[in-house]
Length: 361
Ligand code: F6P
Image (cartoon, rainbow, N blue to C red; front, side, top):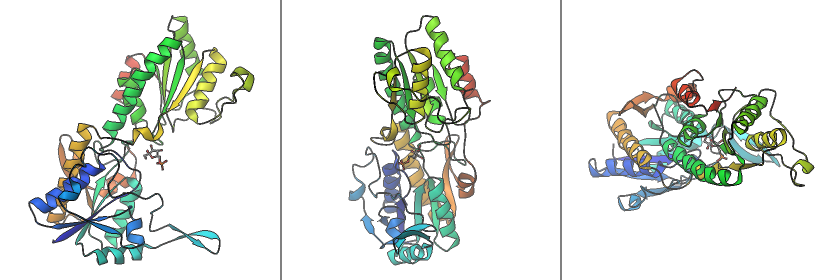
């Protein structure tokens, strides 16, 4: 091995720069390899190659930075790449272009940092002859094959801080506040930040909920003298009976029409049925931006260093993973074939319920 390449694909995530820095430093300091960064995920290998040389100076000062210095892409699946043709958008297989452009970089191996979609592509490119090592990434923590991914700890910290802040304003105004957090398929962020931030209700994709039960729970809290309420709802949470939980009319809400996502729907129902003034906060991409926690800087660094070791040993088509306290090698297949979901019967849900938090249902 003389030279390696690295790309970051899919949604950004705090800790990506720690991985890039870990790869660059481990490759250069002990091994004397060269490192080339591919820009904007697989897009940089579809058009191009678009690359940037990565030396020690180029990764200085990036450990504490959010996002990815290499950029990422929103549309870059080379096996189904959207191309405009005669006024319509066709999905074309441009994967051979990726293989050819990778060869043009002169690199002997490629580190692909990404979530399940990106790792699926990585596995297929490995089968086409690109020597690939994967690094699993997602703030949702829904990848199998690794105990946890970097970025998740930062997201839970951001949501917990938001819940602390929202508690004081909810308490002052005697309001309910519904906080919608990320998690399309898995409710890890909602569940762990809900426990850390002392939520009253947590709604997850894995445990369908009945809106009547949520409203009753809030109503009982009020009867017991509680004058504010915090509900955490994952964006993928599913109400029993469909998505339009309740449509609040303009006269029920100071002349304003209110619709919106699941958080807003739950808020509408609480306000309409319990007569409690309710606000919604959608934290959205705040959970993905900004500086990584120390945990994520360390995990990202460990993953980057381990990825270089896997390349050295020729473990292509494999990925790095956390198992217990150790960073190990794992099958990419594990991360792409099923999702790591919250177990409704597991100890985390049990803990939340034992603390008096309503978790779905
Ligand atoms: O998978 C990570 C994630 O942050 C999800 O929680 C969220 O639904 C999605 O990405 C948002 O994606 P985008 O940045 O494309 O809107």
